[in-house]
Length: 239
Ligand SMILES: [Zn+2]
Ligand SMILES: [Zn+2]
Image 1 (cartoon, protein in one colour):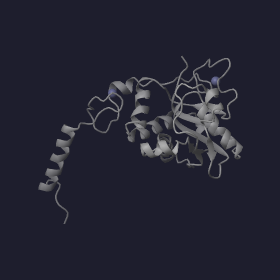
Image 2 (cartoon, helix red, strand yellow):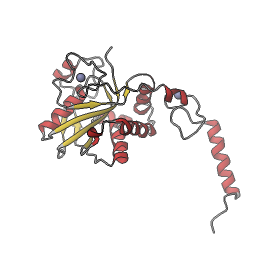
Image 3 (cartoon, rainbow, N blue to C red):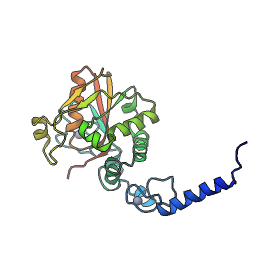
Image 4 (spheres, rainbow, N blue to C red):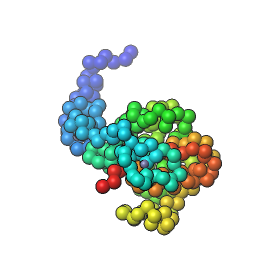
């Protein structure tokens, strides 16, 4: 016979949970403030301040119009790019929370916001491919953030996911190195490890210069992909 809900062990367990919540209260993943409701990830203020990007966007590079001239994705191997948010404020802090704080439920929130806002054609008949993390970084971190977002997006959308890309080269990348420098120095050594689907949607946390998406798309196209598009949670705006 199962114990009644009000049995002493149940009461003790509930008291323990309440005590734990009082000692380590649930905090906003962006600003760290204590949350009124434990199931939320963001406080009301951070949620209200999410830097949503409007609909007037270049379909190729994902920047608000006008993106150029010239469009920064004019020579890119990916055909389309989109992100729900600007890489700023709350979105920037959420990316850091996922990447460095290991706040994995944040990946679920990111996938939900991508799935809710992405142009329908971007999510139609595609296979999700996460941008690979360098193996040394993955070992150090214990997970890869693009893989987490792509996995959550696959669960939510029903789209298949294939981890067919690998990243080689040095584990550290020069921050601030220009796109041309990074490409020339071979720091974006992307290789294809598995069969490549014909229509790919690359997934990453942040779309910065587009050099990483471009290197991934080039590798995929070289291995037979007919079409490659890219989606990220946040798009860095040029200043
Ligand atoms: Zn907050
Ligand atoms: Zn553009």
